[in-house]
Image 1 (cartoon, rainbow, N blue to C red):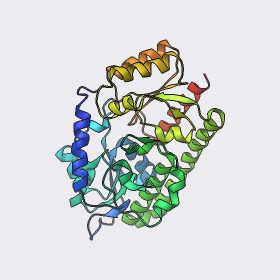
Image 2 (cartoon, one colour):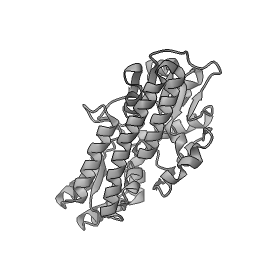
Image 3 (tube, rainbow, N blue to C red):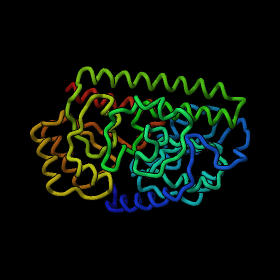
Image 4 (spheres, helix red, strand yellow):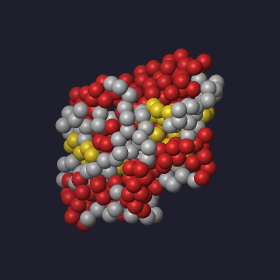
Length: 333
């Protein structure tokens, strides 16, 4: 639970200011003409354990992956890197991060780094600009190649949803980009990295197949989420989030939803207008706790979602599989 509801919004404003001033970066780009040193065991730094788990799946035994944020009970939006964290970013061979306002500190610290960079948000059809932030260069063809993958995605109040780690197709692309970056730093292990990326994407395909099955059985079904965390996932599953937009926007920005929005949310749960409540366990305040209690009293199934890996979980595919299983069970209840 957050101890300071307004702090999240303040940090985002600061992050946005920092981001506008940051140097433009490519999806996989070198921030120095010299580039990283060649090594048989690259150092990879990820902004969160979610992106760290993707990097680890690709790097395997031929990479050292460090995740800066790895606290299951905390809010990633409130994370403030230490000087030691900044040093890790500067010394890395490869950086894997979300992009946009979510972890802008990585881009700031990377200005003095020679690391190759994998910026997930830059792979969105509209690039980082679609998140309401400063865009970065794309590799030729990236945007056109994957535009259909993202067509129709739900948007947040400021543009596209910044939680791009819930976009399974995009996460698969990040794995491929990470393999490319690692192969450049460690050419002797290039095939190993690319084989791992292929295996990871096979797992992604299996998860997407389950979402397609949900869509076939429940296309157009209404659900309600306390925060627009999983809109990419819901869109692919054919589900419609009917939660009051002002409520979810307030929660996303660390603010308290209005009494009217809480009442609207309560009404749709009490009258079972939503087939399930999707509850972000890392963005909790009195308003979200109220709707959770109402959902349980009204026998509305609850799907608990997270922004980072739960305690004891290190595998991205296992994490998303468990969350999709919750969704499957809720819709079939």
